[in-house]
Image (cartoon, rainbow, N blue to C red):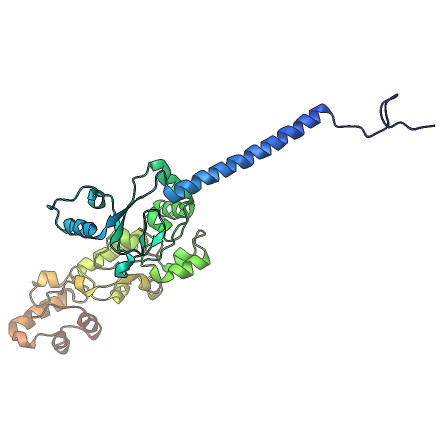
Length: 344
């Protein structure tokens, strides 16, 4: 007896695919082909724009004598430019390469091949490109990574991209600053999650974070320092005024009440006192009521300084002399001697 694999009365054989399955398979094949074609066309379009943007740059192969005349005209804006050569000087950023006959920049022949003929140079004028083409170019062109000095607290979005960060990474750094974030030290920049270790090692030597000058900073600048806050920021400004308008050395901060060494050590590497911005204290000309406001002088010493000035020649005026006369105690005399004082 014979076993039939097909329908009753039919020929033996395997059961075939249904019509719907066949149509689905064909549709899937066409979908894959269409997708691959779209990818190919997109890649070709992007490649074309990246290479030429929406239109290629213009290259002129010019007779050397004529080109030299054009270059001379560039130096002389009032000169008449020969017809056909005006493009090389018309705000298009044209660049000129000398032929190999002068041993400078290799020339090109009119058909685009490298040439070595004497007697001509190549003038290249970059074309103007549409905003859309520039956007595609910026997104897909191979970026040239640069290294240059920058302050991470002020560097622009575009410059961050030049430094090697993606647009998204650069935006993250800028947004951190906009929300009040601040990079006080190089190590703070390294801790940012968008800054890879390899990138930081390359850029570390180029990071320039300006120090806070105690004589130029305002209360907001002081407030931004670690461990300061509004109270000590106002005290730092107030103490500067009591000193006569400027700090003479950084350690004077520790003379502020409750400004201890621990607080000073936490920020000493972030601050500076530039001698160019120090106002010499007019110790030998101020009246008594102004002298007594200085934290190293006070009322008693202020009166003594005035008497000392009245009874001694200016050649004898010095902080050491005030100390020897008993007008200033040893501790205050030592601190005052470190201050920049106006000459008698």
